[in-house]
Image (cartoon, rainbow, N blue to C red; front, side):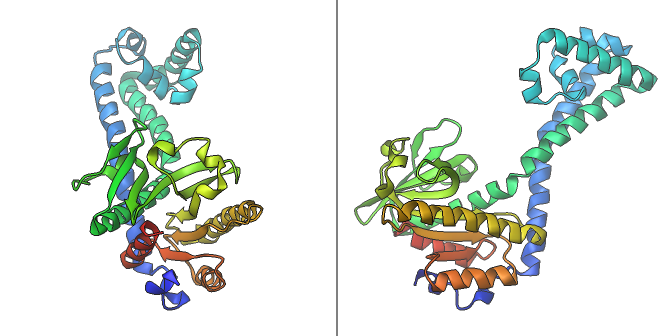
Length: 315
């Protein structure tokens, strides 16, 4: 059994308290990193706005209209779907109700409200950042496993949606990667993150297929025999949400089993979680023993992640 290479008992799966603390620190640092552009935008807005003697003068300053809308509470999505006349009316209303009452401190009020909206936007994106950090950590481990075996690989750039030949210089590629493909033992495997699979009719965290990068398309996703393995990856580090994450993962994996049972196919299923509690560890272990799950690992344990990665690239 592949999981026995890095797990001896269910206790090995439990997340240590120090790892939970380290996870919260990592999320805080990532939040600060992602907030930096907003702070710089606010600083640039302040410099431009300081040339206005009165709040209404802000309307005459070139280049800050979008920032005024942001300060007025408009998200990027709302801005896209609003007519220009309505945007102007909203800005004027914002100036009248919030900036003019601030008197000589209207620039500071503008900046505070700009950052308030940007902060709300950041909060929304941060709800997904734990998953992104988990993907990056696993991707780094998989690439290391590939390089160790000398396998050739390609990676899918999320921005350009193009496959790029992998090299020995892998610095930061996990920041913009949404898929990996490699060839080992005369077999081609392609791993895709976060894709809705027609057979399952739901989004799956990780899908391992028997195909080349050129064959990754909507038609391939409809061929049951192409799928080698599916995995659920949960990067949330808050113990309060651990049971819910596990419940979500179990539902997804059960749906996959049901969908492929009708084709008499049994792709390997695996689970990786950042925070695993005692009761979760017992359930995961039972599923490993009865082969409901083929493999599992605690994301905070680098040795476990490395072992699972080696298993994955050799499927």
